[in-house]
Structure formats: C-alpha cells, structure tokens
Length: 161
Image 1: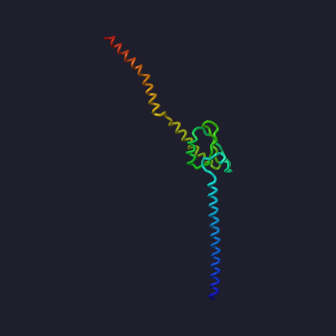
Image 2: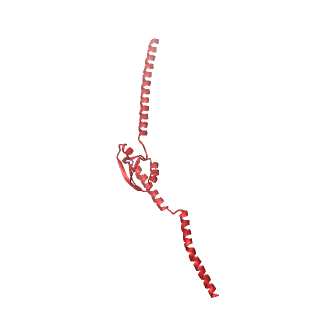
Image 3: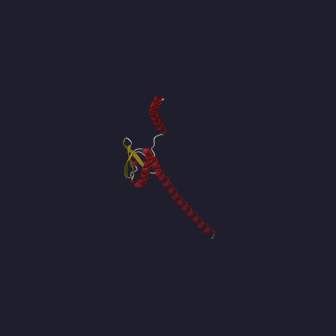
C-alpha cells in the first residue's frame, strides 16, 4: 500500500511539474509577444516626422493646406498626439499630411489652431516703444507750430500796447 501511494505521489508530482512548465512556457511566450509589440511600437515614429517616414507607416494619408505659423500648429498637434508631416509649398505655405485614421483628432487640433490664429490676429497690437516713438514724432511736428502761434500772439499783444 505504501508503494502504491509513493507511485501515485510521484505521478502527481510529474503531472504538476509538466503543468508548471506549460504554464511557464505560455507566460514566457506572452512576455515575448508583449516585448516584440513594444519594440515595434518604438520603431514607428509618432508626432511630427518627415513625409517619407509618415508614408512608411503604410496607412492612407490626407492633406490640408496651411498658411502662416506652422510652429503654432505643432504646439497644438502635440497636445492631440497625432502623426503628421509638413511639406513646404511656398513662403509660409505648407501642406499638412496626416493619417486618415486620425482625421477626427486632426480636425479638433485644426479647429483649436484656427481659434489660436484668430485670437493672435485680434490681439495684434503695436509694441509700446513704437507707440512712444510715434507720439514723440507727432509732438516734434507740433512744437514748431506751437512756437509760431506763441510768437504771433506775443507780436499782437506788443502791437496793442
């Protein structure tokens, strides 16, 4: 009876060790798969990139023409975490390329960018130093006229006396 119990104990131990090895193998396979996925994710660039790198993502792309400050758009796009590239078409004129799958995020980023551009255009005031210079020039132009008026009034007063 003792021998039979020993044999069964050994059989259970062998089965448990096989089960543990299988579970361990599956766990290692899952870890390897996750590491490969992270590695692949690190290989594809995100955010602003060259047109060539964006095209290498093998996804369809769309374009939007942008005029003006592309730096302002970059700031907004980073906030929305989108993949995009700029292609220069002229002085302060760019073509924004982006993934078609991110069209909603680009639309939201572009509307925020447009609001910022409008706000900056509205708030565009001349610097204070320029206003001081203009005021000084106006005062300099008016001084000779004021002196002439003062001299004429003095002459008239002297003539009356």
